[in-house]
Image (cartoon, rainbow, N blue to C red; front, side):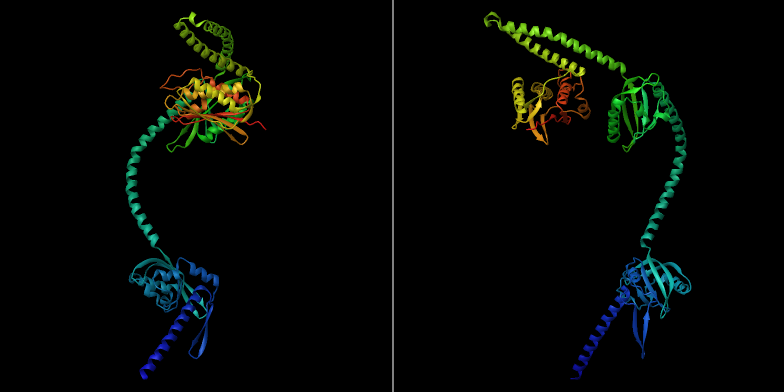
Length: 555
């Protein structure tokens, strides 16, 4: 029975020790996290109260959350308290650290410095680097700051440990880089000696180039300027001052706007700002006031951006070319076109009439060869009639007399008539029509047929390979869009910006195309008088989609 009783007694004592250990862990955790501000400890026959002089919950929580290690030791060097960061540094749990001499975690090569710091720290604050060992004998270099604390039960020494591992690695890296830098610096000094002479020579060349630029810009007939990426003008050539009669102070930055004709300022500013934002070439025609007599003369303005190696715009270089004389010549040309087209219309009508009279004679009275010639003559006369009618339309547009009645009409009938005509004219092409809904608009059926046939003719003219053309109508909001899509040569961005200009023709290197370049210009004007919009979407080599939008008529 005796051995059994001893076993039961040992088991009971073991359980009590486990309870005491758990209670000790909870007490340590409470002190560490700030939940316990004081302890009552039995000392011999009496109890003694132990408190921290600055027992503040939030302060201790702050200490616990620190990334630096925090340790408190007594005069014998035993650890009274440490936070989780220090325990993690030495790779031990808190209960295995508290109560252990701090010297246990100091590497042998740092013990002498630790003893000196421990001795000094009780009298004044001090700090120095020490090597701290974990339980696996791995050392960590730490900056240890020693400072004395006053406790209710006596003085204690606080140690704050800052891990210097990353700093040491950085120092090592910097030392290596400094060595490389020293080598590079010596090389740079040698290269600098070689470059100084080159820089002096290049500076001399730059000064000469700048003077050459100023000399050139001051003696050309165009007005020249440079502007910053934000649009502010920072240079004008002498031609500008001579023309405007104004100084640089009066026209610098955005002051030049006062020289532009009031009717042109809105368009000029809009295109100028768009170019600044997109980096595209700035181009606009406007009128500038001449200083000597106040007269406005037409100028063509063009500005190109100058970019650095990264593609960023450094500044813009622009020119303004006087085109007043060309404008007047163009007006005279328009007058001539109008007069010539009127003069051509009468004999052309007579010619077609005579051809019709000949063709209506009895078939047996005309030889087959004569009939063939009459047919070809009619084709040529019809083509000539189309050109004359285009010239007349251009003359009317320039004179502001392209007038016609607008009636309520259905688009479906207009489109079907054009497609029927196109199939007869271009039997080799495949016309696909998506035109199920009859959209009602207010317009002139004859003029809208003219626009649609112009777009179809262009689609056929520039589609020699893929012979499919898609004609589609669809509604978006209160508008109806009619689009003609081809799969021909397509248009570049520059061509898309010019294709609606008068007399502009897209050159096809592979195929010779006929025409005067007026069809799209006339179409633009017709759609404009219908309160609509016309445009193009295209990619070079992949075909084009020309479209026009018209407002739907209210039911």
